[in-house]
Image (cartoon, rainbow, N blue to C red; front, side, top):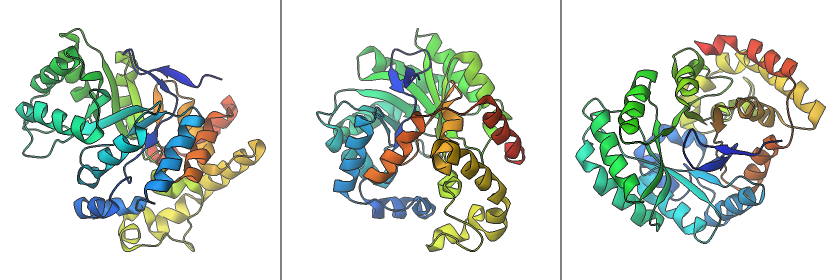
Length: 320
């Protein structure tokens, strides 16, 4: 069973799954920055985050994804601290707010390197496209950093198919590949299949890094209309209303049935559905050691073609 692959057409070899470290560090900073992000739950503290990192690496999952904006930089600092002297591949994302300009990139890169405590970044991704930022101009700044050894592979995040093509062409003119595009993708968020992003990834040789692969916990099977998540922000988000929770129950039942065959959980089956797409690399979050081990178990079994098709058919409504 293949547990690693080259990221896009870069020289970076990565596991078939990564770890999302969005909540690591100061959870209060995350809440201040974006209150709705508390839907993913706060950080569990440095000791549990350390266990999550170490147990993930021991299970062969050594790719960790964060961003400069998470917890106002605290997530990068925490990941850099925990990953020091560990066999860890670090992916992070640089800011792209309305005020961000391509000319700001060198400064942002240096600040991230300082927070991580590293001389180079394994995968550096533009977090969001910005109408004020020229993609070709930005990619030229990124290519300069690759050429001096500060970045090993270049990615983007939340880019449309057309924006991906712009980034890909700009990097190709410098002799560099676009390694990845990180977008939301799960059984309950299948729009990359219909908006051209997944097709563009396949055509250009770009890996689709799937964030929120468990749909904010909806695919774990722990929520229903009678058992809604706690916390104000989760309760007001539309994906956690009673109607939505009722609608996903047939899918949860299917995930449960398939999982029972392999002694796996619904979330592990949902992750496996993504892993078996060779273009896709999911990055479920792990706030503690238990979650890290649960996620990594998705690499230890395979679904049949019939089971993959059943999951495809059961979630067609979430492709649009």
